[in-house]
Structures are given as structure tokens and as C-alpha cells.
Image (cartoon, rainbow, N blue to C red; front, side, top):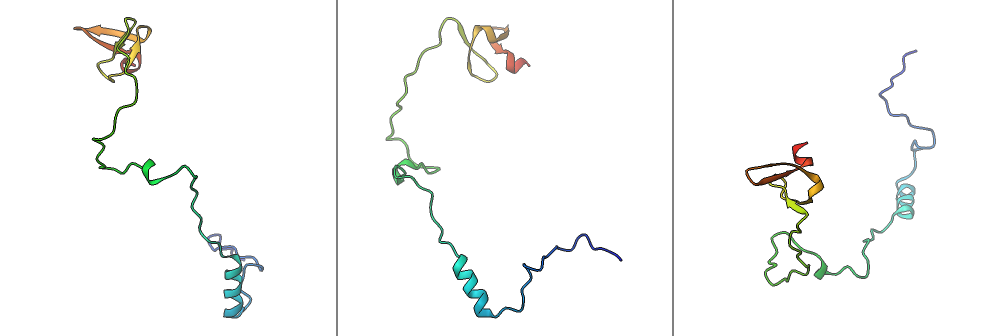
Length: 101
């Protein structure tokens, strides 16, 4: 006897037993759930930034610290790194270990 392994396996409980349309509708209405949004009380429209939004009225609220004596800026990734991560210097340009890999 040949077995079709690609055929969906349906158990007896899952097969429709010639139920009436009214019975099917009643089952669906019992299990129907209303969609709910997962939002917190602090979520407001003011906290959402849309792409292309005009942010010219916003003010930068971080403190910028200048590069320290024991730091350098990698000329490949442009990140400020500690001197211990210096791989090489060439013509005054410094490169970090990660970029030189």
C-alpha cells in the first residue's frame, strides 16, 4: 500500500462532520477575539518620530566631551577609541584594531 507523505494529515476530530452552517458560525463567534493594541500609558503621539519629520525646533540634550589625551579617532570607522586599541598610524591618520582586523 502506497503512502502519500505530502498529503496533509487530518485527524478525525479536525474533519468537518457535515456540520451545519449555523453550527460553524456559532463556533467561530465563540472563539472570536477582538484585537487589542499593546500600548503603555506613556505612549503618546508626541513620542513618535516619523521619517522625514521636521526636527529643526528640537534641541540636543547631551553633553559633548572633547577627545581626551589617551584617545584617538579611527579614520576608517570614525569612532573615538582608547590608545590601547591603536593598530597603526600612517601619515597622521590612526586606525583601530577592529578596522585593521
